[in-house]
Image (cartoon, rainbow, N blue to C red; front, side):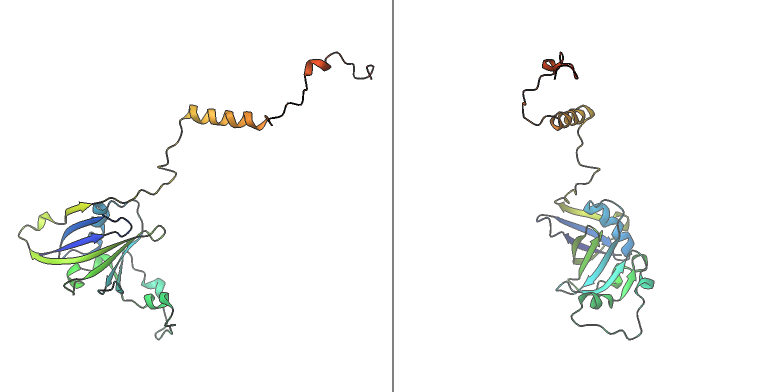
Amino acid sequence: MYYYKFKVFYDEVEDFVRDVDVLANTNFEDFHLFLYQCLGLQGNEFAAFSICDQKWNKQKEITLMDTSEDDEMPEDPEYDEEDTYSTKSRLPKFVMKDAILKDFITDPHQHILYEYDFIDPKTFYIEFQKAAQTENPEEFPRCTFQKGVLPVRLTSKNIPQPDVDEAQLLLDDLEDDEYDDGFDDGYNEEDYNDLNEFSDF
């Protein structure tokens, strides 16, 4: 049985790299689940693979779910050659669970893009290194080298929050400042206690 060795990069982190080994008959859905853990991704976001040429131009798309119904087009659609989005929409599409790695690795240096979370996008560059035989398929998939970690995006869940006492002190300070305008107008309430509203004027 054959396995494939890939090297994975993330260009937003200079020293980020992973070396992974995956059986050739693995489908892209299992490859996605393995990468999710190996790369340190979080959440449950949409993901997709793109089979690329040597210049990282997309040639085929492999998505987690079948999106063909959302991409219905006329039999002979007309495209503006300058319209990048339209050009991309013509790419052949496949579903991860039905797509097997060995059917898409056709180049000795095959390039693959792995895109995760299209709202806060993360794009990983996967380069095919080599194919080799194994007599122990149970050892796969495996990560043989890893360096670098993904940056943590600050959200309301992981921003440090002040404790109750500290928060109350901040609130008290704000309330005191609201009524202190920094001026002393010389007013003293005791100076007016002996005045009669009607007879003293």
